[in-house]
Length: 274
Image (cartoon, rainbow, N blue to C red; front, side, top):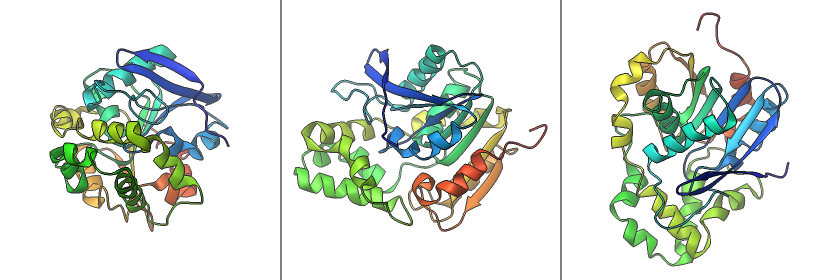
């Protein structure tokens, strides 16, 4: 399907673009970095057969506004998400969160005090020591990366995206993921958002994770090289009642590597009493 975000929501930092599909109980899909809601292009229509599915691009990402001066930290994303839920009139939706979308969903739940029906994490940032690898280099040397020649920047982002998938991208998909970060404006936007994402914003709620009482599911690619399996185990230890499911031969992007298996988990429902 052609991926469109026809709706707009205004924030102090710019316009967030979003869309809604289907009918039934609401479920919101929250993407991470450096991705956009395009990552849900196969998942959203499948879920929309029985659910009302909401998708959006975080401010500074995808088709939402990108400009200097935006607050793109996890706390700001959580405030925007809380405001979006209010705009949509959703009081207890299901939430499915990937990558830093997990941290955004948790801040919205625990600190912005928005309630969910249930929460599913997919290879998600949640807490612990996750400022590592290339991400740490982006934080420490954002000015250097921002001055890379365009061809070098694009090659780096493409390599980073490929590193996130175990099986590789289908034709045309890598270009679609790259598109928001191309050109001088896209390059500036890429490092602008990375230099504002901080581990301190997940440490702020870590002591509250044991209080999460809604049903929680954790789905993780066994071959994830961005957030290796120990991060799934960390989250499972801190939300003890959560279900933990592994998907073999899949990396950080289950939406690309194993969409069918991911859909099976998303449509399975939670055990009675969960």
